Length: 84
Image (tube, rainbow, N blue to C red; front, top):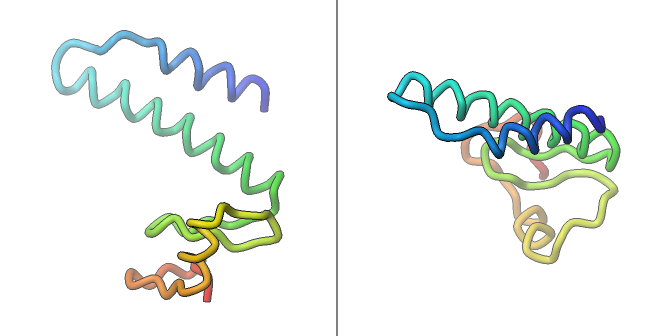
């Protein structure tokens, strides 16, 4: 996991690339790092997050904003991981 954090930090410092294709590739790599860190968090905290609406399901103590949103959660996009 430490290597994943270091990789995400390194990718944050990468300079904007020339052209749309180069920038798209840079942003995709950064998004992959974010997704990996989110997966680590979910595994360590034993929670599941709805990718469509960010609702949290699991034993972790979510923030009050997330808790109130999760309590009334019915994901309109048909997320199979949603709360409710």
